[in-house]
Length: 240
Image (cartoon, rainbow, N blue to C red; front, side, top):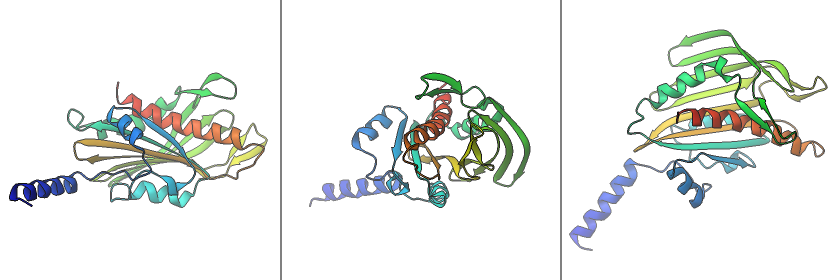
């Protein structure tokens, strides 16, 4: 091996270590290509074992939170945004997520009824506290067909990542007939971190609920579409 070849290999090694790829082999080549083109990737996966993100200091919080939930229904939402020209992206997404009242009116399409609805018909903050890196917001959401329920939002603004999570604190009752989701069993998480020349926006949403064969398709479609609708709305709002 010539000195020039050795130097090239060394430089490539250094470059790779400085700009580590955060994704694992569960992200396909075509999905990587779509991310490079600025698209939002939305994936339904069978379990947390199938996530496409490596566990790193930046992703440990979101992965551990969802593994603790152990959802029966789970989806990933991913977007890559260039860092240059978007240096304030963390501040932008934080402002979007803090405006809880703006959650009202997010358009949601029901595949079962083939109609458009508001994802949330009402949203109100009942209490908010800030301590160091942690912001906690207690709020009430109204979502058809589950009615009004308490939720908790937590935001961590760490030096290496931004982390947002929302979870139901009360049971969700389907048309006042039966409990569809127990308290703290529906969780949506969004994290933002820098990877080399890019921002990585990564979300996981899931619900830990029994799979009932006679309701499975309807439940999966209902909950997963709601979770994906919210995260996709936030990511696309950054482009405006």
